[in-house]
Length: 285
Image (tube, rainbow, N blue to C red; front, side, top):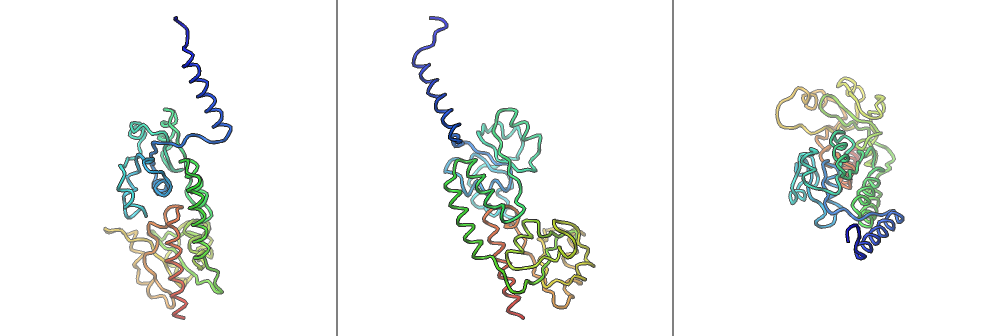
């Protein structure tokens, strides 16, 4: 009879509504099954927490060994170019993005009805558990996230140092750029037992530290950024002879690698390397 609905269909609709309402009341939603990441840091958090078969695609940077600490694990997954059209065609039920993902991409995906979870970059070691918890909630993997957070905090407590004397250190990158205490890299430096000379130069976050000023600050150690292949005048400052002529200053070379980029448990490797550097300095005193 036209206009009628079968009783079985009515029962199914009611059941679906009841289940949806119950999930909403409980503050939970079904775990996503087709997850696409378009950001380097969300790539790695997803790899750490996702259930088997949950990840559909990762960003193209996920397989770059210079950028990702989990490049090897990422090679098991297809990659994407982070464009809205490409991602939409993958038919995801969740897209993981960063605060600096193109706003037009995020807006288009959301307009098309796709859920997009935005992750802010970590500005301190305290942000790492928050990012892990956020990813756990997004993937429906809260228990796994809680276990990872517990391990991270225990390992960080083990590695963190409060020495009687903190050696003065400078983080120095191309174009004479440095970062202060109110950054993830600065917090890694602090946890390893160093004092950051950027603060003496009035730089709480990041900015230019001219070579002449760095020399006048005369830190105990200079940790330089990675010198990428090729020639660039911006990189010449890292090899300037004046740095190696400083009496009592050790140029430690490149330690600020891929483990420093994202707020993931891999930052512990950076803390450990710097802690070992500090201990080696103490051994030479």
